[in-house]
Length: 119
Image (cartoon, rainbow, N blue to C red; front, side, top):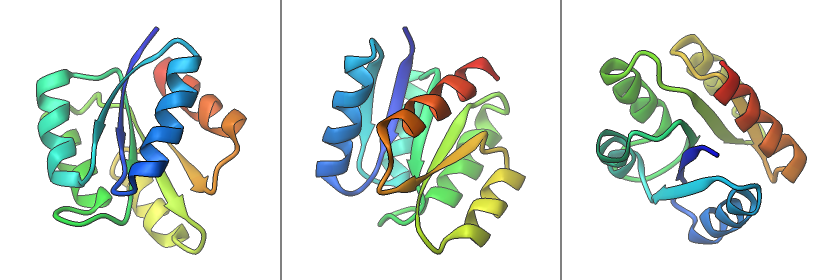
């Protein structure tokens, strides 16, 4: 299937998402902050990215801008907590394909990835 970069500073969430994605046949690479996400994207060239918004080192919005500046075709889905709607709208303006609200429903996560991969 596809190679997905999962980026979140919460390890338990990365583990949960990784299990979901690998169980659906995807290959997963992980990063724990935006800076590491940019490096992982450049080195691993994933097919899609799940990118948390609030993280140390570099936030998700900054990482999105950096990834898209290097690869305008990057397919990024934002992970967001409730109450971050204005940031999500900004992320979509900068090229995010979709967003998933945490805590997420597995079906919603998989549907967002499928839509991003089809884009």
